[in-house]
Length: 397
Image (cartoon, rainbow, N blue to C red; front, side, top):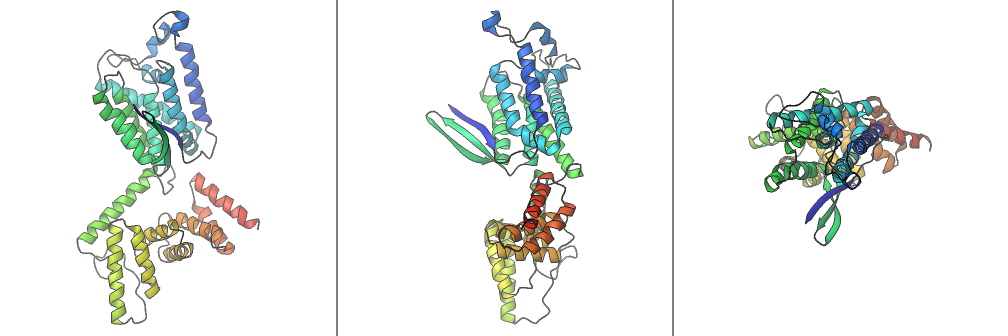
C-alpha cells in the first residue's frame, strides 16, 4: 500500500474564501438530501430515485445534467475526497479570483469536464461527482501558485511521514499523469478519468488565458511568467549557441548592448573582463545562477561600471537576494533600475529593493522611496498588501 495525500499548502488565503466554503456546504447538503444510507433504508441504492435524473448520462445527456451531476456523490468517501481537495486547493484560488469569479470557474469546470466525458464516452453509464470541477480548481492553483510547496502525507506499508513537494510537480506528475493516465491502465475501477483530465485542461487553459490577456493581474511567480522566462532563456541559450556574445557591444541590432566604461582599461584587465563575461553567459545558459552571481561579483569588483543585459542582471540580483547577500543584491537591483527602467514588471523590482532596504540594510528613507514607487503600479492584491504593510511599519518608526 502506497498513499500520497496533500494535507496543506505553504500559503494561506489573504481573504476569507467564502465562495469555497459555500460550495463545500452546498455539496454536503445535497449529498445528505440525495444519498440513501443502506443501514437505514435496507437498500443498496446510493441515490434516492428522484436524484437519478440529475446524473450525467453520456450516451443521451439532458442539458441540465452537465451541471447537476457535479453536486451528486456516490458515497461518504467520494464526497469527502472531493471536498477535501476543494478545501486544500480552492481556498487560495478563491482568495485570488474573488467570490463570483471563483464560483463561475467551478461551474464552468464542471460543465467542461462533463462535455469532455460525453464526447469521449457513449456508454449509458451514469457519471456523478464534483471531481471534474475540483480538477479545474486544482488546475487553476497550478497556474497561479506553481512555486508553492505542498505538504504530502505518505504512507508506505508501515512507514508514515510527511514531505514537501513543489505544487508544479505534484499536480502535474501525481494528480494528472499518475492518477488519471497511468492508473487508468492499472485499475479496473469505474472512474471518469476523462472528465478529470478535461477539468484540469479547462482550469489550466482558462487561467493562462486570463493572465496572458491581463484580465487577471500577474504576480511574477505564476505559471505564465515562468513560461515567459523559460522562453526568454531558451532564446538566450540559442543565441549563445549560435556564437552571439551577450555582453558584446557588437552583434545583431536586436540585442541589448551594454554601456562601456568611458575610462581606458588595460589590455590584461580587459581580457579578464571578457573572460568573466563569457563565463557568466555560459552559466546563465546552464541555469547555474549561483556560479553566475559569484562571477558577476568578481566582474564588478574589477570594473563596477559593467552592466549585464536585462535578463542576466535580474537573474543575478534575484540569486544574490536568495543567498542573503543583501548589500550586493541591492546594488544589483539599483543598477537594474538605473539601466532598465522600462522593464515590464519594474514595480516588482522596486518592491524587492524596498523590502531589502527596510528589513536587512536599515535604510528607511531608501526603502520608503522604492516602496512608494512600487505601490503606484502594483496590481496583485497580495504584493500590494505586503508593500502597504511594510510602508506602515516604516512610517511608524
